[in-house]
Amino acid sequence: MSVRSAERYAFETGIYRPPSEGGSDSLLVRFTRNCPWNRCEFCAMYKTEKFELRSVEEIKRDIDAIAALCNDLKGGRSDGTVSRETVIALIERHPELNYHQGFAMVYHWMLSGAKTAFVQDANSLIMPTEQLVEVLRYLRKTFPSIVRVTSYARAKTLSQRKPEELLAIRKAGLDRVHIGLETGDDELLKKVKKGVTAEGHIKGGQKAVAAGFQVSEYWMPGLGGQAMWENHAINTARVLNAINPHYIRSRPFYTIPGTPMHAAAQRGDFQMLTPNEQMIELQRMIEALDVTSRVCFDHAGNYWRDRNGNLLFTHSYEGYKFPEEKPKVLERIAEGLKVDHQRPEYLNL
Image 1: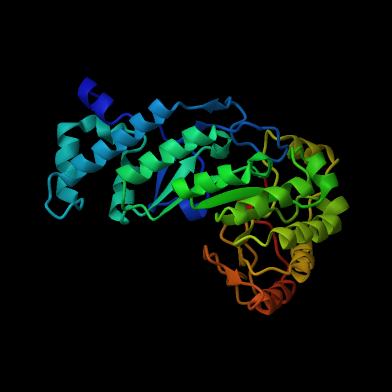
Image 2 (image 1 turned 120 degrees about the vertical axis):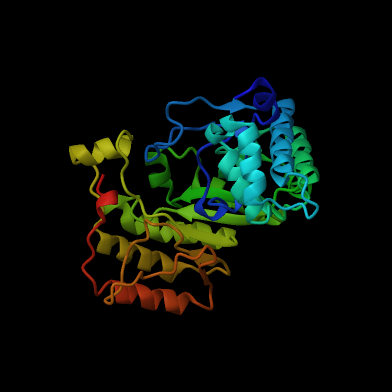
């Protein structure tokens, strides 16, 4: 890339984001690098990287570079939109953009209406409050078209924040937090080295709800294996009932090569649930849920099918509204249990 374009369009983009905050619809803006905890035994993300806070100046430079790219993609069009012609013209002037890590992301974000942004990486709320507030305000000011900003957050970090800090962050422009609950069982949390207790999850989730965030909690059917499945199901429901988040998202567990839990499974020290046993665990958890959340199965890991070969659950990001659609979800589970499921090849790792 030429010196001019390298400076004008230089910004970082991380790898990971939730399915509901990615695709072509979200601008990915990196406030921190990697994960400050990075010890979970089921996780393969960030394992070769160290956590780093980015300075306010770095983040603002990235936002300015994205704004410059957006402006040049418009090509001076009076309606402020991007077109195929303006993109081709810009690439002809700066052919190095073909290899820019964030060029396609920004282009598709603009085509989608430039309405949502996801703040990377794994726990941006660990930033000093005043710095996070400053860059959130700058992001919103630079891109007034944005209607929703979201980020990953650790429950322990949320639990340690003062209510007034969380409120300031919310008012500065962060709308939704995605929290990896994984399980509400203390014994299992300790076993997988999550670094937080069930009470810490409850406190963090409740404080996030009270501050006005949309709260999206993720749990892992199957994480406890054969030995701990029932306590995993019951205690996860107990924690979720105490939080009553806006979203509950199912991320069925499978082992990933290179992680301690994969090694344990290979040694025979951890026995995975079969697909149908996972559904029985899911049934137990759903039966115990008493929430007004949206319960979602918006991930390919929720691969179960009915007797007609159709997906058992919708993969919509909005899922099922509880308690109204709880009977429907339980009916779908009962239907799924009539099928002898086999784990897809891409999950047989």
